[in-house]
Each structure stands twice: as C-alpha cells, then as structure tokens.
Image 1 (cartoon, rainbow, N blue to C red):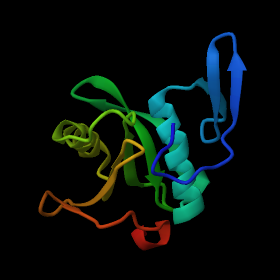
Image 2 (image 1 turned 90 degrees about the vertical axis):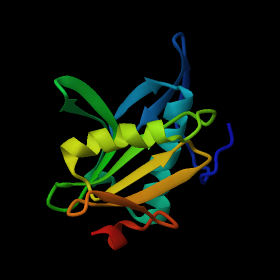
Image 3 (image 1 turned 30 degrees about the horizontal axis):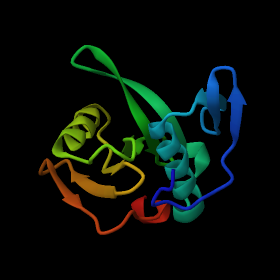
Image 4 (image 1 turned 180 degrees about the horizontal axis):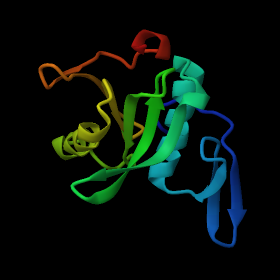
Length: 149
C-alpha cells in the first residue's frame, strides 16, 4: 500500500505464517499488518528524514495505566533516556480522531513526553505538550530530532 511517507528498501519475507517484516528496532521478524506497515515506514522516515537516532528509539514499550498493561507503539528518548516523543500508529484506513489522541494522551500521563505524534501513514500530526499548563499545541510539521532536544 502506498503511504504518504518515503519509500525505502523494507525487508519482507514470505513464510507459512504469511508475509513478515523485519523490525530493525526490535531486531525480529513480525507478521505484516497494515499498522506494522505504517510503523516501519514511519520509523524509517524519522531516522532518514528527521535525523532521529535509531539507538534512542524503541517499539512496543510496555507501561501501566490504571493497573492495566498498555503498549506505546514507538517511544523516542532524549540523550538522558527520558521519553521525548510518543508515536501512535493506525492502519491507513483508520481515521485519526479525538479517540486516538485520547489514547496517546493517556500513555503520556505515565511517560510525560513533551511531544506526541499520531500517524496512519497518510496523515501525520505532531503536538507539543506543556506540562505546566496541561495543554497541547499542534505543530505545522514534525521537527527534526535536533529541534526537539
């Protein structure tokens, strides 16, 4: 599926379980789903176009919220290993709604990252969170890593 992200040489493999994609952050092969397709392309975009350091990024980070274990799709850390950006992915056919922003805001109530990004591969939204006022402000574009730190 064509996304609103740069194409790259994605590693795919056909197995008896179906098509798998290699996740370079988790260093393992995963079943290719529409959301995973978006994740792999978006991570590549952040690394190749926005100079995000791959070594400061992690996929599927577990956290506890209201006693339940949840998973952040991608977390980017600053050089002191504090959460800097939380990224939430949806499949391309899933609309980015208030419900999606509510989900990532709940994750951020645990991690307190100053930036949040939501993408379905077609539309990408980035906002800055001001913890002192508990307010979010949307940015015109996704900043480079150097602009965030």
